[in-house]
Image (tube, rainbow, N blue to C red; front, side, top):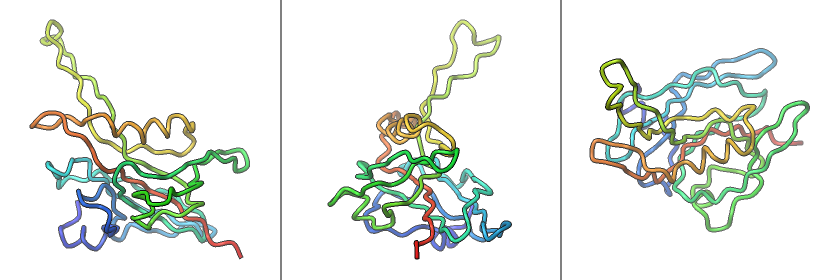
Length: 192
């Protein structure tokens, strides 16, 4: 986990974000790859603003194409981003098609039309572990915040992951709504 000072250096600063940061570029997490491409490490805060964590979930070696830029951003819900599925050779990708005027994404200023969605935060329901001593009274499932890798996933699954933030996360004080979404975007190089 990055130190407080390192988190400040890594955090994507956005005036529209008031409840915390969901994702950071990891300090010293960029590595060159063949043909001008690079990989980048990210750190996800899977806590909620009222229960921040010092134990970040790393996502390592996310590959980006030559000339592109890795963008990590946290935006308040509702986002105000219109995504579109595009075919790129034999693969599909989820691309920012429009930023709604006056939306949280526009106020944030870090998302651009043409950015490719690579990772998003999401809320997952995790079943309780049942062992031989608990089969009569199994533990309940828990809603928890996690990250969702969008590569080679269907458009419907990616949109469901983003929409899952409406489900409250279970905390020690009971269910709590997540007001922000963390996104990792790939910004393609400018066309000349």
